[in-house]
Image 1: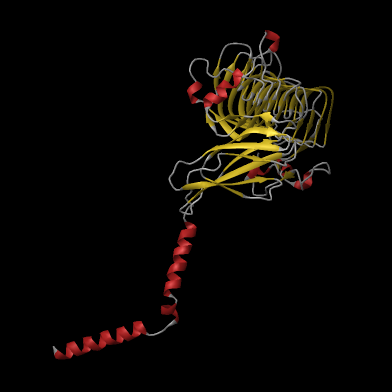
Image 2 (image 1 turned 60 degrees about the vertical axis):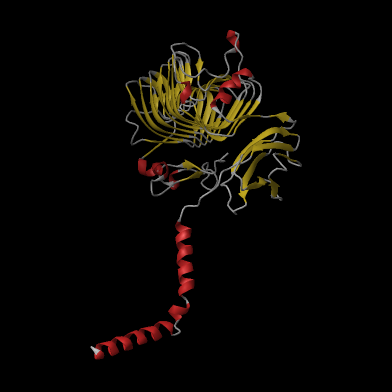
Length: 457
Protein backbone atom coordinates (compact mmCIF):
# COMPACT_ATOMS: atom_id res chain seq x y z
CA UNK A 1 0.00 0.00 0.00
CA UNK A 2 2.82 2.37 0.93
CA UNK A 3 4.65 1.61 -2.31
CA UNK A 4 1.45 2.37 -4.29
CA UNK A 5 1.08 5.76 -2.57
CA UNK A 6 4.69 6.68 -3.41
CA UNK A 7 4.22 5.73 -7.06
CA UNK A 8 0.99 7.74 -7.26
CA UNK A 9 2.71 10.80 -5.69
CA UNK A 10 5.60 10.60 -8.15
CA UNK A 11 3.16 10.30 -11.08
CA UNK A 12 1.20 13.43 -10.12
CA UNK A 13 4.41 15.41 -9.52
CA UNK A 14 5.67 14.51 -13.00
CA UNK A 15 2.30 15.49 -14.48
CA UNK A 16 2.36 18.80 -12.57
CA UNK A 17 5.82 19.78 -13.78
CA UNK A 18 4.97 18.73 -17.34
CA UNK A 19 1.94 20.98 -17.39
CA UNK A 20 3.83 23.98 -15.97
CA UNK A 21 6.89 23.72 -18.18
CA UNK A 22 7.18 26.25 -21.03
CA UNK A 23 6.37 24.85 -24.45
CA UNK A 24 5.33 26.36 -27.78
CA UNK A 25 1.94 24.66 -27.51
CA UNK A 26 1.18 25.75 -23.96
CA UNK A 27 2.40 29.29 -24.57
CA UNK A 28 0.13 29.65 -27.60
CA UNK A 29 -2.94 27.85 -26.31
CA UNK A 30 -4.93 31.00 -25.53
CA UNK A 31 -4.15 32.48 -28.92
CA UNK A 32 -5.12 29.18 -30.54
CA UNK A 33 -8.45 29.09 -28.71
CA UNK A 34 -9.11 32.71 -29.72
CA UNK A 35 -8.23 31.91 -33.33
CA UNK A 36 -10.58 28.92 -33.34
CA UNK A 37 -13.33 31.09 -31.95
CA UNK A 38 -12.71 33.68 -34.66
CA UNK A 39 -12.78 31.00 -37.36
CA UNK A 40 -16.03 29.64 -35.95
CA UNK A 41 -17.49 33.14 -35.78
CA UNK A 42 -16.52 33.81 -39.40
CA UNK A 43 -18.48 30.76 -40.47
CA UNK A 44 -21.63 31.88 -38.68
CA UNK A 45 -24.25 33.86 -40.59
CA UNK A 46 -24.15 37.55 -39.78
CA UNK A 47 -27.02 38.80 -37.63
CA UNK A 48 -28.34 42.26 -38.46
CA UNK A 49 -30.53 44.63 -36.46
CA UNK A 50 -33.73 46.29 -37.74
CA UNK A 51 -33.53 48.67 -40.69
CA UNK A 52 -35.22 52.03 -40.95
CA UNK A 53 -37.86 52.60 -43.65
CA UNK A 54 -36.35 55.02 -46.17
CA UNK A 55 -38.23 56.88 -48.88
CA UNK A 56 -37.91 59.85 -51.18
CA UNK A 57 -40.36 62.74 -50.79
CA UNK A 58 -39.07 65.07 -53.51
CA UNK A 59 -36.46 64.89 -56.26
CA UNK A 60 -35.15 67.01 -59.12
CA UNK A 61 -33.21 70.17 -59.88
CA UNK A 62 -30.04 68.64 -58.43
CA UNK A 63 -31.57 67.52 -55.14
CA UNK A 64 -33.09 64.48 -53.41
CA UNK A 65 -35.19 64.96 -50.25
CA UNK A 66 -35.38 61.93 -47.95
CA UNK A 67 -37.49 60.88 -45.01
CA UNK A 68 -37.34 57.73 -42.89
CA UNK A 69 -39.18 55.91 -40.15
CA UNK A 70 -36.58 55.17 -37.45
CA UNK A 71 -36.14 52.01 -35.43
CA UNK A 72 -37.99 52.21 -32.11
CA UNK A 73 -35.48 50.08 -30.20
CA UNK A 74 -34.11 51.86 -27.13
CA UNK A 75 -30.49 51.42 -28.25
CA UNK A 76 -31.03 52.84 -31.75
CA UNK A 77 -28.68 55.81 -32.23
CA UNK A 78 -29.17 56.96 -35.83
CA UNK A 79 -28.33 56.16 -39.46
CA UNK A 80 -25.30 56.35 -41.68
CA UNK A 81 -26.36 57.73 -45.05
CA UNK A 82 -24.45 57.29 -48.31
CA UNK A 83 -25.25 57.58 -52.00
CA UNK A 84 -23.80 56.80 -55.39
CA UNK A 85 -22.58 57.86 -57.84
CA UNK A 86 -20.70 61.06 -56.91
CA UNK A 87 -20.70 60.20 -53.20
CA UNK A 88 -17.69 61.59 -51.37
CA UNK A 89 -19.37 61.88 -47.96
CA UNK A 90 -20.78 59.38 -45.49
CA UNK A 91 -23.05 61.09 -43.01
CA UNK A 92 -23.96 60.04 -39.48
CA UNK A 93 -27.44 61.41 -38.72
CA UNK A 94 -28.13 60.93 -34.98
CA UNK A 95 -31.43 59.83 -33.49
CA UNK A 96 -33.69 62.68 -32.48
CA UNK A 97 -31.91 65.26 -34.65
CA UNK A 98 -32.90 64.07 -38.13
CA UNK A 99 -35.79 62.23 -39.71
CA UNK A 100 -35.42 64.14 -42.99
CA UNK A 101 -32.42 65.11 -45.04
CA UNK A 102 -31.74 66.66 -48.46
CA UNK A 103 -28.83 65.71 -50.70
CA UNK A 104 -27.86 68.62 -52.94
CA UNK A 105 -25.45 69.28 -55.79
CA UNK A 106 -26.54 66.24 -57.79
CA UNK A 107 -26.70 65.81 -61.57
CA UNK A 108 -30.07 65.72 -63.31
CA UNK A 109 -30.95 62.65 -65.44
CA UNK A 110 -28.52 60.52 -63.41
CA UNK A 111 -29.78 57.47 -61.54
CA UNK A 112 -28.86 57.66 -57.86
CA UNK A 113 -28.99 54.99 -55.18
CA UNK A 114 -29.20 56.16 -51.57
CA UNK A 115 -28.43 53.75 -48.72
CA UNK A 116 -29.26 54.07 -45.03
CA UNK A 117 -27.70 51.79 -42.39
CA UNK A 118 -29.13 51.90 -38.87
CA UNK A 119 -26.57 52.00 -36.02
CA UNK A 120 -27.07 50.91 -32.42
CA UNK A 121 -25.24 51.78 -29.18
CA UNK A 122 -24.26 48.10 -28.85
CA UNK A 123 -22.08 48.50 -31.95
CA UNK A 124 -24.53 46.48 -34.04
CA UNK A 125 -25.80 47.69 -37.42
CA UNK A 126 -28.64 46.91 -39.82
CA UNK A 127 -28.11 45.32 -43.20
CA UNK A 128 -29.05 48.59 -44.86
CA UNK A 129 -31.93 49.71 -47.05
CA UNK A 130 -31.66 51.36 -50.48
CA UNK A 131 -33.87 53.51 -52.66
CA UNK A 132 -33.06 54.57 -56.23
CA UNK A 133 -34.35 57.25 -58.54
CA UNK A 134 -33.45 58.85 -61.88
CA UNK A 135 -33.19 62.53 -61.02
CA UNK A 136 -35.77 64.69 -62.86
CA UNK A 137 -34.74 68.06 -64.26
CA UNK A 138 -37.43 69.88 -62.28
CA UNK A 139 -38.24 69.47 -58.61
CA UNK A 140 -40.99 66.85 -58.37
CA UNK A 141 -43.08 65.46 -55.53
CA UNK A 142 -42.56 61.72 -55.09
CA UNK A 143 -45.20 59.32 -53.77
CA UNK A 144 -43.78 56.22 -52.13
CA UNK A 145 -45.43 52.80 -52.47
CA UNK A 146 -45.01 50.98 -49.15
CA UNK A 147 -48.10 48.75 -49.05
CA UNK A 148 -50.47 47.00 -51.51
CA UNK A 149 -53.13 49.61 -50.76
CA UNK A 150 -50.70 52.34 -51.88
CA UNK A 151 -50.35 50.53 -55.19
CA UNK A 152 -54.12 50.16 -55.54
CA UNK A 153 -54.55 53.89 -54.88
CA UNK A 154 -52.36 54.84 -57.85
CA UNK A 155 -55.64 54.88 -59.79
CA UNK A 156 -56.63 57.98 -57.79
CA UNK A 157 -53.81 60.01 -59.35
CA UNK A 158 -52.67 58.52 -62.64
CA UNK A 159 -50.22 61.32 -63.48
CA UNK A 160 -48.04 61.32 -60.34
CA UNK A 161 -44.46 60.12 -59.80
CA UNK A 162 -44.31 56.85 -57.81
CA UNK A 163 -41.39 54.93 -56.30
CA UNK A 164 -41.75 51.51 -54.68
CA UNK A 165 -39.84 50.99 -51.43
CA UNK A 166 -41.07 47.48 -50.55
CA UNK A 167 -41.86 44.19 -52.25
CA UNK A 168 -45.64 43.76 -52.46
CA UNK A 169 -47.98 40.76 -52.36
CA UNK A 170 -51.38 41.21 -54.05
CA UNK A 171 -52.94 38.05 -52.59
CA UNK A 172 -55.66 40.18 -50.99
CA UNK A 173 -56.84 41.25 -54.46
CA UNK A 174 -57.82 37.85 -55.84
CA UNK A 175 -61.56 37.74 -55.15
CA UNK A 176 -64.06 38.09 -58.02
CA UNK A 177 -62.28 39.23 -61.19
CA UNK A 178 -59.18 40.05 -59.19
CA UNK A 179 -57.01 43.12 -59.71
CA UNK A 180 -58.48 46.16 -61.44
CA UNK A 181 -55.78 47.44 -63.84
CA UNK A 182 -54.28 50.92 -63.40
CA UNK A 183 -55.26 53.17 -66.32
CA UNK A 184 -58.07 52.71 -68.84
CA UNK A 185 -58.52 53.24 -72.57
CA UNK A 186 -58.97 56.94 -73.48
CA UNK A 187 -60.81 55.87 -76.64
CA UNK A 188 -63.58 54.61 -74.34
CA UNK A 189 -63.64 57.74 -72.18
CA UNK A 190 -61.07 56.23 -69.83
CA UNK A 191 -57.95 57.76 -68.27
CA UNK A 192 -54.58 56.14 -69.02
CA UNK A 193 -51.69 56.02 -66.59
CA UNK A 194 -49.54 58.98 -67.65
CA UNK A 195 -47.21 59.30 -64.69
CA UNK A 196 -43.88 57.73 -63.78
CA UNK A 197 -43.70 54.41 -61.94
CA UNK A 198 -40.27 53.39 -60.65
CA UNK A 199 -40.31 49.89 -59.17
CA UNK A 200 -36.89 50.53 -57.60
CA UNK A 201 -35.95 46.89 -58.23
CA UNK A 202 -38.83 45.56 -56.12
CA UNK A 203 -41.28 42.75 -56.87
CA UNK A 204 -45.06 42.68 -57.11
CA UNK A 205 -46.21 39.09 -56.48
CA UNK A 206 -49.49 37.22 -57.04
CA UNK A 207 -51.21 39.52 -59.51
CA UNK A 208 -54.52 37.82 -60.38
CA UNK A 209 -57.02 38.78 -63.11
CA UNK A 210 -59.79 36.58 -64.51
CA UNK A 211 -62.41 38.28 -66.68
CA UNK A 212 -64.45 37.69 -69.81
CA UNK A 213 -64.21 41.37 -70.77
CA UNK A 214 -62.33 42.26 -73.95
CA UNK A 215 -60.25 45.18 -72.70
CA UNK A 216 -56.63 45.83 -71.70
CA UNK A 217 -55.44 43.77 -68.75
CA UNK A 218 -52.28 43.58 -66.66
CA UNK A 219 -51.02 45.38 -63.56
CA UNK A 220 -51.55 48.43 -65.75
CA UNK A 221 -54.36 48.50 -68.28
CA UNK A 222 -53.60 51.40 -70.61
CA UNK A 223 -50.27 53.23 -70.16
CA UNK A 224 -49.09 56.51 -71.68
CA UNK A 225 -46.45 57.02 -68.99
CA UNK A 226 -43.19 55.43 -67.88
CA UNK A 227 -42.71 52.11 -66.03
CA UNK A 228 -39.26 50.90 -65.01
CA UNK A 229 -37.22 48.71 -62.65
CA UNK A 230 -40.17 46.49 -61.74
CA UNK A 231 -40.48 42.72 -61.34
CA UNK A 232 -43.71 40.75 -61.39
CA UNK A 233 -43.76 37.17 -60.11
CA UNK A 234 -46.42 34.45 -59.99
CA UNK A 235 -48.84 36.43 -62.17
CA UNK A 236 -52.07 34.79 -63.32
CA UNK A 237 -53.87 36.90 -65.94
CA UNK A 238 -56.78 35.67 -68.09
CA UNK A 239 -59.09 37.82 -70.22
CA UNK A 240 -61.00 37.93 -73.48
CA UNK A 241 -59.01 41.01 -74.46
CA UNK A 242 -55.37 42.12 -74.54
CA UNK A 243 -53.61 40.31 -71.69
CA UNK A 244 -50.13 40.65 -70.17
CA UNK A 245 -48.38 40.70 -66.83
CA UNK A 246 -47.27 44.35 -66.80
CA UNK A 247 -49.55 46.23 -69.21
CA UNK A 248 -52.31 45.56 -71.71
CA UNK A 249 -51.15 48.41 -73.93
CA UNK A 250 -48.36 50.99 -73.86
CA UNK A 251 -49.00 53.68 -76.45
CA UNK A 252 -46.58 55.90 -78.36
CA UNK A 253 -46.24 58.31 -75.42
CA UNK A 254 -45.18 55.57 -73.02
CA UNK A 255 -41.95 53.76 -72.17
CA UNK A 256 -40.91 50.58 -70.39
CA UNK A 257 -37.43 49.46 -69.39
CA UNK A 258 -35.78 47.18 -66.82
CA UNK A 259 -38.90 45.11 -66.14
CA UNK A 260 -39.35 41.33 -65.74
CA UNK A 261 -42.31 38.96 -65.38
CA UNK A 262 -43.03 35.32 -64.54
CA UNK A 263 -46.24 33.31 -64.26
CA UNK A 264 -49.06 32.63 -66.74
CA UNK A 265 -51.00 34.86 -69.17
CA UNK A 266 -53.92 34.13 -71.50
CA UNK A 267 -55.70 36.54 -73.85
CA UNK A 268 -58.13 36.22 -76.74
CA UNK A 269 -57.29 39.40 -78.66
CA UNK A 270 -53.53 39.45 -78.04
CA UNK A 271 -51.20 38.19 -75.33
CA UNK A 272 -47.64 38.91 -74.21
CA UNK A 273 -45.55 37.73 -71.32
CA UNK A 274 -44.80 41.31 -70.28
CA UNK A 275 -46.88 43.60 -72.53
CA UNK A 276 -49.71 42.79 -74.93
CA UNK A 277 -49.30 45.76 -77.30
CA UNK A 278 -46.27 48.07 -77.21
CA UNK A 279 -45.80 51.28 -79.26
CA UNK A 280 -43.62 53.30 -76.89
CA UNK A 281 -39.96 54.29 -77.01
CA UNK A 282 -37.37 51.52 -77.37
CA UNK A 283 -38.09 48.59 -75.07
CA UNK A 284 -34.83 47.92 -73.19
CA UNK A 285 -33.51 45.45 -70.62
CA UNK A 286 -36.81 43.60 -70.28
CA UNK A 287 -37.47 39.89 -69.95
CA UNK A 288 -40.22 37.38 -69.34
CA UNK A 289 -40.46 33.73 -68.31
CA UNK A 290 -44.26 33.66 -68.56
CA UNK A 291 -46.26 30.82 -70.10
CA UNK A 292 -48.43 32.57 -72.72
CA UNK A 293 -51.59 31.29 -74.44
CA UNK A 294 -54.35 32.82 -76.54
CA UNK A 295 -55.72 33.86 -79.89
CA UNK A 296 -54.54 36.67 -82.14
CA UNK A 297 -57.80 38.32 -83.18
CA UNK A 298 -56.42 41.74 -82.26
CA UNK A 299 -52.66 41.26 -82.60
CA UNK A 300 -50.04 38.61 -81.89
CA UNK A 301 -48.95 36.19 -79.21
CA UNK A 302 -45.41 36.58 -77.93
CA UNK A 303 -43.17 35.46 -75.11
CA UNK A 304 -42.35 39.08 -74.23
CA UNK A 305 -44.75 41.23 -76.30
CA UNK A 306 -47.87 40.31 -78.26
CA UNK A 307 -47.64 43.11 -80.83
CA UNK A 308 -44.43 45.17 -81.01
CA UNK A 309 -44.80 48.50 -82.83
CA UNK A 310 -41.42 49.77 -81.67
CA UNK A 311 -37.85 48.55 -81.19
CA UNK A 312 -36.41 46.17 -78.59
CA UNK A 313 -32.82 46.12 -77.33
CA UNK A 314 -31.23 43.70 -74.84
CA UNK A 315 -34.41 41.76 -74.15
CA UNK A 316 -35.27 38.06 -73.90
CA UNK A 317 -38.14 35.66 -73.34
CA UNK A 318 -38.22 32.07 -72.18
CA UNK A 319 -41.33 29.98 -71.74
CA UNK A 320 -44.10 27.95 -73.33
CA UNK A 321 -46.29 29.73 -75.88
CA UNK A 322 -49.41 28.35 -77.51
CA UNK A 323 -52.07 29.71 -79.85
CA UNK A 324 -53.25 29.70 -83.42
CA UNK A 325 -51.31 32.12 -85.63
CA UNK A 326 -48.91 35.09 -85.44
CA UNK A 327 -46.81 33.59 -82.64
CA UNK A 328 -43.22 34.52 -81.81
CA UNK A 329 -40.74 33.53 -79.14
CA UNK A 330 -40.10 37.23 -78.44
CA UNK A 331 -43.06 38.97 -80.15
CA UNK A 332 -46.02 37.70 -82.15
CA UNK A 333 -46.20 40.60 -84.58
CA UNK A 334 -43.62 43.30 -85.34
CA UNK A 335 -44.45 46.50 -87.22
CA UNK A 336 -41.60 48.92 -87.97
CA UNK A 337 -39.59 46.92 -85.47
CA UNK A 338 -35.83 46.85 -84.94
CA UNK A 339 -34.77 43.99 -82.66
CA UNK A 340 -31.15 44.11 -81.54
CA UNK A 341 -29.20 41.87 -79.16
CA UNK A 342 -32.23 39.86 -78.08
CA UNK A 343 -33.03 36.17 -77.78
CA UNK A 344 -35.83 33.69 -77.18
CA UNK A 345 -35.83 30.16 -75.80
CA UNK A 346 -38.63 27.74 -75.00
CA UNK A 347 -41.44 25.97 -76.83
CA UNK A 348 -44.15 27.12 -79.26
CA UNK A 349 -47.30 25.29 -80.34
CA UNK A 350 -49.45 26.80 -83.12
CA UNK A 351 -50.71 26.52 -86.66
CA UNK A 352 -49.02 29.10 -88.89
CA UNK A 353 -47.08 32.39 -89.10
CA UNK A 354 -44.68 31.33 -86.37
CA UNK A 355 -41.07 32.41 -85.75
CA UNK A 356 -38.46 31.82 -83.09
CA UNK A 357 -38.16 35.61 -82.64
CA UNK A 358 -41.13 37.07 -84.59
CA UNK A 359 -44.26 35.38 -85.89
CA UNK A 360 -44.78 38.10 -88.50
CA UNK A 361 -42.69 41.15 -89.36
CA UNK A 362 -43.33 44.22 -91.50
CA UNK A 363 -40.83 46.98 -92.36
CA UNK A 364 -38.24 46.09 -89.77
CA UNK A 365 -35.08 44.20 -88.95
CA UNK A 366 -33.59 41.64 -86.54
CA UNK A 367 -29.85 41.95 -85.82
CA UNK A 368 -27.39 40.08 -83.57
CA UNK A 369 -30.12 37.94 -82.02
CA UNK A 370 -30.88 34.24 -81.73
CA UNK A 371 -33.64 31.72 -81.04
CA UNK A 372 -33.42 28.31 -79.41
CA UNK A 373 -37.12 27.52 -79.66
CA UNK A 374 -38.78 24.20 -80.34
CA UNK A 375 -41.73 24.81 -82.67
CA UNK A 376 -44.60 22.39 -83.13
CA UNK A 377 -46.66 23.58 -86.08
CA UNK A 378 -48.91 22.18 -88.82
CA UNK A 379 -48.45 25.23 -91.07
CA UNK A 380 -45.94 26.13 -93.76
CA UNK A 381 -45.07 29.73 -92.79
CA UNK A 382 -42.62 28.92 -90.02
CA UNK A 383 -39.08 30.14 -89.42
CA UNK A 384 -36.28 29.77 -86.94
CA UNK A 385 -36.11 33.59 -86.64
CA UNK A 386 -39.09 34.98 -88.60
CA UNK A 387 -42.35 33.50 -89.83
CA UNK A 388 -44.27 35.71 -92.26
CA UNK A 389 -42.63 38.87 -93.59
CA UNK A 390 -43.14 42.01 -95.63
CA UNK A 391 -40.06 44.17 -96.29
CA UNK A 392 -38.25 42.67 -93.31
CA UNK A 393 -34.50 42.03 -92.92
CA UNK A 394 -32.61 39.56 -90.76
CA UNK A 395 -28.86 39.96 -90.20
CA UNK A 396 -26.25 38.19 -88.04
CA UNK A 397 -28.96 36.14 -86.33
CA UNK A 398 -28.96 32.41 -85.58
CA UNK A 399 -31.35 29.65 -84.59
CA UNK A 400 -30.96 26.13 -83.21
CA UNK A 401 -31.92 23.84 -86.07
CA UNK A 402 -31.63 20.68 -83.94
CA UNK A 403 -34.72 21.56 -81.91
CA UNK A 404 -36.79 23.46 -84.49
CA UNK A 405 -38.77 20.32 -85.47
CA UNK A 406 -40.22 21.93 -88.64
CA UNK A 407 -38.97 23.09 -92.02
CA UNK A 408 -37.77 26.67 -91.98
CA UNK A 409 -37.47 29.62 -94.34
CA UNK A 410 -34.16 31.25 -95.20
CA UNK A 411 -34.14 33.93 -92.51
CA UNK A 412 -31.21 33.58 -90.13
CA UNK A 413 -28.42 31.03 -89.92
CA UNK A 414 -29.29 27.47 -88.94
CA UNK A 415 -26.81 25.91 -86.51
CA UNK A 416 -26.65 22.78 -84.37
CA UNK A 417 -27.13 22.92 -80.62
CA UNK A 418 -23.40 22.39 -80.11
CA UNK A 419 -22.57 25.22 -82.51
CA UNK A 420 -25.09 27.55 -80.83
CA UNK A 421 -23.17 27.12 -77.58
CA UNK A 422 -19.82 28.08 -79.08
CA UNK A 423 -18.62 31.68 -79.30
CA UNK A 424 -16.80 30.90 -82.56
CA UNK A 425 -20.15 30.36 -84.30
CA UNK A 426 -21.13 34.02 -84.15
CA UNK A 427 -19.90 36.73 -86.51
CA UNK A 428 -18.30 40.10 -85.81
CA UNK A 429 -21.64 41.78 -85.06
CA UNK A 430 -21.69 39.92 -81.74
CA UNK A 431 -19.90 41.62 -78.84
CA UNK A 432 -18.71 38.95 -76.42
CA UNK A 433 -16.76 41.50 -74.36
CA UNK A 434 -19.57 43.83 -73.32
CA UNK A 435 -22.95 42.35 -74.30
CA UNK A 436 -22.88 38.56 -74.58
CA UNK A 437 -21.30 35.64 -72.72
CA UNK A 438 -21.44 31.84 -72.90
CA UNK A 439 -21.15 29.51 -69.90
CA UNK A 440 -19.19 26.45 -71.03
CA UNK A 441 -20.58 24.41 -68.10
CA UNK A 442 -24.16 24.78 -69.44
CA UNK A 443 -25.34 26.06 -66.04
CA UNK A 444 -26.23 29.60 -67.11
CA UNK A 445 -28.94 29.63 -69.79
CA UNK A 446 -28.19 25.95 -70.55
CA UNK A 447 -25.01 27.00 -72.35
CA UNK A 448 -26.67 29.30 -74.90
CA UNK A 449 -25.47 32.94 -75.11
CA UNK A 450 -26.82 35.21 -72.41
CA UNK A 451 -26.85 38.97 -71.90
CA UNK A 452 -24.39 40.44 -69.42
CA UNK A 453 -23.98 43.74 -67.61
CA UNK A 454 -27.67 44.30 -67.05
CA UNK A 455 -28.11 47.17 -64.56
CA UNK A 456 -29.46 45.68 -61.31
CA UNK A 457 -31.67 48.67 -60.54
